[in-house]
Image (cartoon, rainbow, N blue to C red; front, side):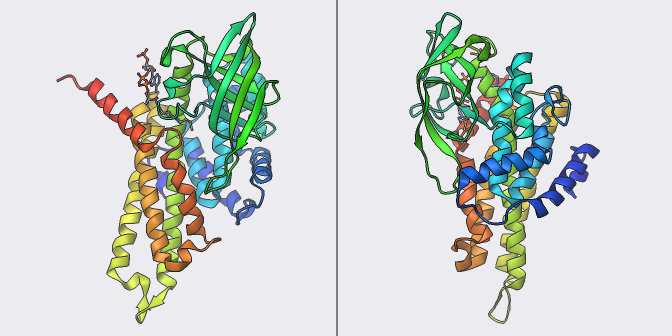
Length: 384
Ligand code: COS
C-alpha cells in the first residue's frame, strides 16, 4: 500500500481506507442527467458523511487542526478514482473557501467555513477573466471603495460552481496600480444585488461552469480577505495548496484507468491469446503504472513538504500538477487504446476518464504556466 510510505501518518491511512470503502457503496456509478442537481446532492452527501470537514481547518469545524495537504490529496485521489463529479465538488468546497481559511477574519471564518464543512453552502473561486486567465495580474474587474463598501464591476469567466454556488471568492482591482499589486480578494454572497450569471458554459466533462457579471455590486469592507492590494498573494497561496490536490485527482483518474486496462487486457481474447499476453500490451501497462507511481510520489512529496516542513511549495506543487496531469492524460489515452472501440463508447469508464482528465491540464494554471513557475523558481535560487 502506498499509504505505508513515510509521507503519511495513521490518520491519513485510516482516512484513505475509510473513504475508499465509503465511495464503493455511496457514490453514483453513472453520469447524471442534471449536473447542478447532482453536484448539490454530492455536496450534501459528502457534508453529511463528514468528508468536507477536511476542506476547512479545525478552528472552524474541520476534521484536522490545519488544512492538511496530504488529507486533501488523498481525498481527491480517492474520490477521483470512483467519481469525477464527487472529486469536483469536494475540490471546489476547498478552493472556494481556501482564501477564507488563509486570510479571513475570525468572523468570516466562523460565518462561512462551518457551512462549507457541513455541505450547507457551496463555494466558488472567481479569478479568471476573458482576458486574464494565465496572466491573472492583467485582470480588469474593479473594486472601488465607496464609504465602507467596495463597488465591483466587471466579468469573471470559467467559474466552476457558477450558478449553484452560495458565495464566491472574487478577485478584483481595488488600487490604481496595474499588475499584481493592485488586486484585493472579497467574499461575495451569490444573492448580492449586481451579481448576475451571464452565461452557463457547457464542457466535455459536464460540471457547473459560468461567466459572472458584476454591475455595481456592493460588498462591505468586512468581506475583504487580507489587506487591500494583497489579493494576488491570496490567490497564489490558495493555488499553491490546491494545485497539489489537482495532481492528486489526476493520479486518481490515472490509477482508475490503469485498473480498468489491467482487467480488460486479461479478459480480452484475440489471435488465440489474451491481450495481456502480448509484450506490446505489457510494455504499455508498465509505462502506465510507472507514470502514475512517479506522479503520486511528486504529489505527496509536495503535500508532505507543506504539512510537515511548513515549506512554501509553489515549485513542488507546480511540478506535481504538471507531471500528474500530463501523465494521467497519456495513461488514460493508453487505456482507451487497450479497450479498442469500447474505449470511446459513451458510458464506458475509460471514455468518461478521457473527457474528465483534459481540463486538469488547463485549470488552476495550465501546464505552460507550471513550467514558468518552476523555471522562475530555479533561476531565482541559482546563485552561480
Ligand atoms: N505565493 C506568494 N506570493 C506569490 C506567489 C506565491 N505562490 N507567486 C507570486 N507571488 C508574489 C510574487 O512574489 C510577487 O510579489 P513581489 O512583487 O512583492 O515580489 C507578486 O506575487 C507577483 O508575482 P509574479 O511577478 O510572479 O507575477 P506574474 O504576473 O508574473 O504571474 C504567474 C505569475 C504566471 C505564476 C501567475 O499569473 C499565475 O499563476 N497564473 C495562472 C493563474 C491560474 O492559475 N489561473 C487559473 C485560475 S483558477 S481555475
